[in-house]
Length: 218
Image (cartoon, rainbow, N blue to C red; front, side):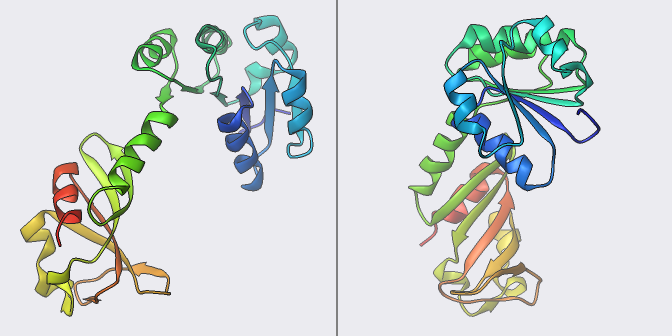
């Protein structure tokens, strides 16, 4: 079944199942694999292709046609050894793009060492987002990389009634307002002539310290 744009997802816990089902909703073909018969049975109603197999066994993956997939996601959670062995097996099969979930920094370092092209830390990243959302006026926080973030926050009082150009937020706080949403409205792109009102929600972009400082304004 593997063609360009199709994805192999190994490990169908909450994270892996979420990845697989979302890709399916986006119109992608997904093959889900898990070692647990119970989990495979539970996923069979929400996924078109799901099989029970030991993903650490290279011959089992070959029989599933894993080598023909352009992308694989290793979503195995608490079993670190299985996660590493599965990633190594996928590398051995020369899959062009391998994403792997890690639960600790050490786990992530090993996954990178064995050949994962990208390592993700969903629990850590969600913890960072939640912590920032508990501080100041931050509603949501997304780290693009270590030097750049997107922050959803409410408009500070000092900017109310002013256009973005007059408020001078980029010059004063080194952040760029990307989008704005009126109460009860939808997000729209921000322009220099956009007027900021009390209660507006802004999406800002910038370096972490600058964005955090802006989100902490009264």
